[in-house]
Length: 343
Image (cartoon, rainbow, N blue to C red; front, side):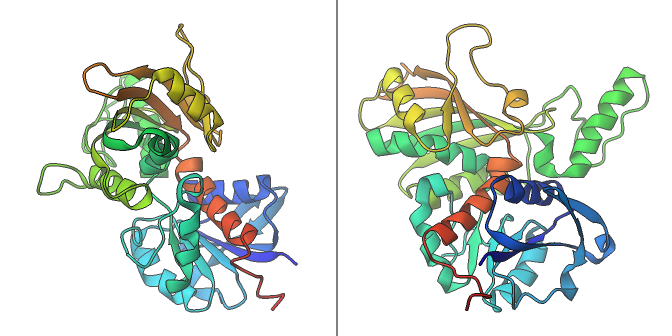
């Protein structure tokens, strides 16, 4: 007997990806319910070869639903996740609302799948920030080998990380530039077309942005609280997929060749690293793919035991929707959750 799964935020970029990935991976669901806000009620969304009509969140009874994957924003999750969880429906939340709660596991299955077992405290599991997810997938196997002490990461994050309106703004501004129309800025603080913006999320008192703080806090919670990390997060005029330059300092020696071999065998990683033009992955090629791609692996001679590398992944998939579905699969495959219908 299969599970009953709800997708909250089903009309958004990530919600649609969640529905697509559930179908692609043959998730053991007898029924999938598409949910969004009241204004989206009745909208049709695709689930495999089926079409689902969207239901309004406040009208849904979760008492017979087993898993709720939530991608409706932090304020909605703060209000609704505890209500849904109180009905013994496991919430896998994609927002930042629960990531820093000590009683809520923050999980990337390739890195810390065992943490999933802690869901019973609140019946909520948190998905990490998209830029953190791909980073820790690449760091974990190297940390196991040579113990990471410090990471310096610079991100090149696509506009889809800021939602559909941000993608529309990049498209509209690009077209306006080509036809010499005025360029309007709504979603971003400065023009994004043919530009870079070194600012994602709000500024904090220490001069870092909240996006940068998230990467620090989440890497420590998921991977190792002793790792020192500093980040600079930049929005770039790319529609989908985040890229990162990662500089790592280890406590033990590790060569670039060793790192390549380790990462080639690591779950979720795909190494494309030829020392020739085009022998690396770009955001365009990573879009629509599940892997975390790693290129440009090389030794950093400015520090002892240092490596540098280039990491790219589809932020809507591994950075959000795919990771949430993988968490649900861990719950089922480890026998941690039985269908309510069976009970």
